[in-house]
Length: 220
Ligand SMILES: [Zn+2]
Image 1: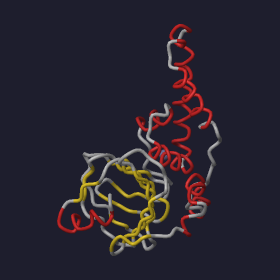
Image 2: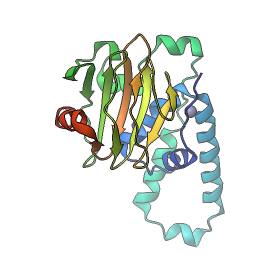
Image 3: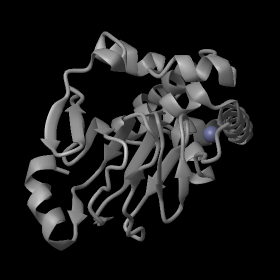
Image 4: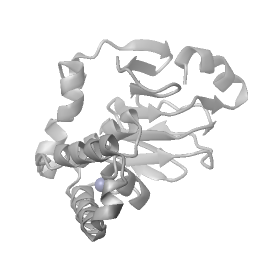
């Protein structure tokens, strides 16, 4: 049961091909889990198609053609059927297909790098825009992330276990979209390691002594 979904803004930006590559990847992975957001995406695409049909020919010819074809390619890509998972199979399959393609294996075979007591990470080898990172984070049960705010945005998708913070509890398939307004301290709250896929578009800002000590280690 997924309780935390993509915002309307995210769905529309994804449909329009306006998200950064890292953000689009994490959104795509959430859509693999979430029929609700997949249906909303189809609505957004239908709306976009209807708007395009309303444009008259002179307006169309004034568009930049490379740009237009890029948009068409994106929309064709998104018409690939998203897998429909039931909640039973969801628990068994923790690696979204898109992530599996990038890794070449499931999250059970990730070569984790320890960044501190109770926290490991793996930075995905992607060629992203300046300041953007996509990483897998693995938190031991009970691990308390140092309190931090965000200079940019941080979007986190839970793949295994769960965490909770001031805004609620996030379990498998749930997505959290944190921006500069959120000052939070996530805690891994089950008896299995919490594994998340996270995209950050600018460095996090840790607060307090432990956070400042961890900043250069985590590199986020
Ligand atoms: Zn959703």
